[in-house]
Amino acid sequence: MGWNALCISAYLEAAKVLALDSTRHFGLRSLDRILAEGWHADGGLLHVLAYSDAAAGRRDVPAVLDDYAFTVVACLDAYESTADLSYFNFARRIADAMVDRFFDTVSGGFFDTVHPAGEAQPLGVLGTRRKPFQDSPTPAGNSVAAIALLRLHAYTHEQGYYDKAEQTIEMLAGVAGRYGLFAATYGIAGVHLSQPHTQVVVIGNGEAAQQLDSSAVKPFSVSKAVLKLSYEQAVAQNLPPALAETIPQVPAIQEGRATAVICSGFSCQPPIFNPEELARTLQRTLGHE
Image 1: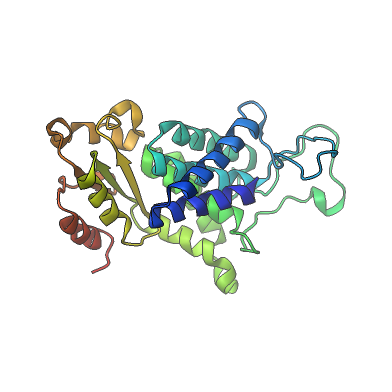
Image 2: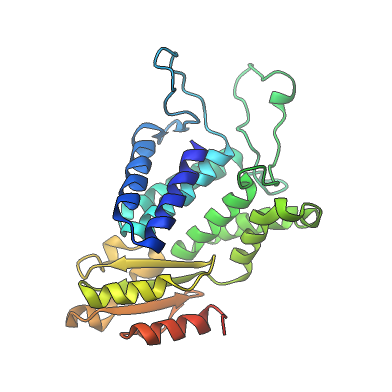
């Protein structure tokens, strides 16, 4: 499941940067299948959704940490791609399940597997729970889990998400320097922790809104998200808690005027109507100047 979620995030990122509708559709359709067939509120996420051999007997294999962390990130990417709050809600539910199943409440960080229930114990090293930190070859589960929680914190203000991410990153800080390139995702998690998450909310329909959206997407930052809303979508019921109180109050919505709002560190700047001004303001906000 985890590798599929990684691919989905890649498809959604490519679709955003290159404006490829077919790529976006494929990524969303793939995620919809995972959420429909591989996620169950009571039983959690599955590790395997389908087998290439149709004759193989189906088994419900519980997901590991990587599956959960990558799927949470894919759901957040899908929300930012569509402004469909159901993806955000899935991200929260799966992240909460990830914390319940894998987080070490004593020492911090995430184990890679769930603690086995009952008397049946895995044999040998299969029974040893680890806290994956090294990228090899996919991003490490702990680093991605921390990134997912920090992104959720930026949308919810829920301190528990931030605290668990911070504990995870601090737990690994002493050994990170030994791993070089293989701690790359850990480094990205550190950037998420040290820099305020920036959300660029573009509101409007038509060409003016599209130009603002293109201007918002261009500057690169690992801690930046772009959310494009139609006028009809810019209502509290369709927004995460961190944006629900501010965005619907933007006067330009009632005026039918395309606008962009930059929010960073849980505060929002005045609305921007010009793509060039948006680009300049983003450069300052992201520290690119």
